[in-house]
Length: 347
Image 1 (cartoon, rainbow, N blue to C red):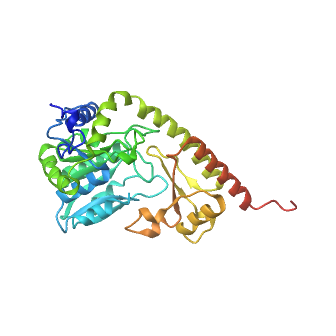
Image 2: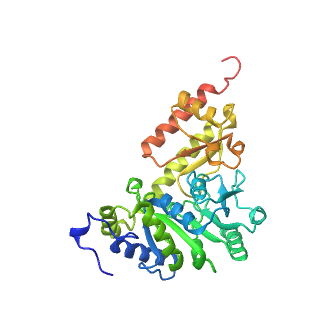
Image 3: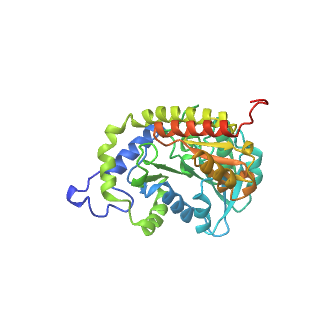
């Protein structure tokens, strides 16, 4: 594959990506999936996974079609579906385990269902979906001729179990649009570099939409990412180890505060039940922690557009911060818990 000359690297790249970056991305995905990936026809560099998701929705679905999403759900998925004129259908994951229920999934599928969006590792719950759950998704896609859109931006940030690449499962390669990004694994979220990997026919359609959405991702950043790729080989693994320490510190502090939570298996979020705070709802609980503990969290109902009441006791905490920041948050949470905990009689 020819490379653009350095003199052109401050101009538009090919709309679907700079050749140097396309090659390293294709090689990396081929290694992960265990199957060849063509950089010329199967990889599209996007402005983050969010743009890739919208481009996929505008490509894959027609007005009135239905798209299944897991709830709680990342806040960009539903607008992406609605932009395409489609209808979101919510597959609820029940706390505290947040597992995919095959029977619930099957019950959601109708003649209008066109696609399923699977985010693993999952934001906001931190689940890394296991073989049984992925088999239920695979069977649903094959039995009902669904396109699978995967958001796997946290694939390198796994602390328990192992991430499975859905496109590598039998029968899914030709019906999967897999979305990845450099921002989370390499801590460069502001670069807005994502990429969509799909069969040639789906990629060709996505590229047309992508071109008219953004023309191309920033060329200098694509060139920089391609040049830096060899040096980043061990970075993601080291980052995962560092995040694991932050996770453990935050989960311990939340539990000592009285909040109920399960340690996330991947990504860098903790979904916690804050009922113990006695607040009227999740927004009141978040406000209480900001005002009285100096710790911020996202109200849980933000992730339940299909049924906000399911998130009224939940808060999402993020541990993608410096270790000293997490330790300070833990200290503040413990101090807050001590200040509101009833004291024994006579003291």
